[in-house]
Length: 130
Image 1: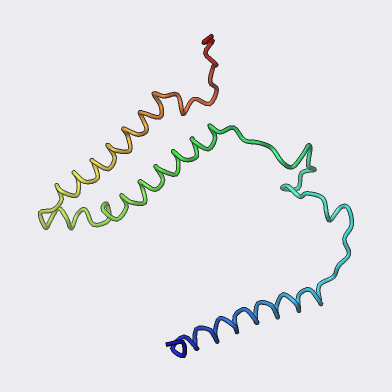
Image 2: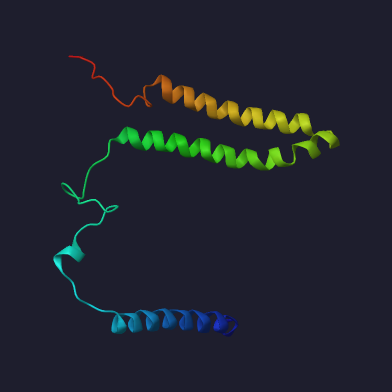
């Protein structure tokens, strides 16, 4: 049983050895002259101002998540739109249309819920509950 995986183990060992060899050769031949300018943070040619760590607002992640959801929605709808004409000619067009409509409806319900809960408001006001 183990002999069946001998080729896999051999190629894995060769791959790891090759990567280690390339990294070692690169370390030997590249110049190493660090200075404060080289070690400074590079950000699009601008001189960095302030600390490198900044904490993002959690609402940014929610808006980014909603964007990703709708981006993935387009990725799922694209194959159906490509073959929709063929579906129409074979009699399955209405079913494909209904499936995509249900898919969009489910996503829209989630979007409206997030919007109604204030999840997409960038600036929220704190309620004065005591």
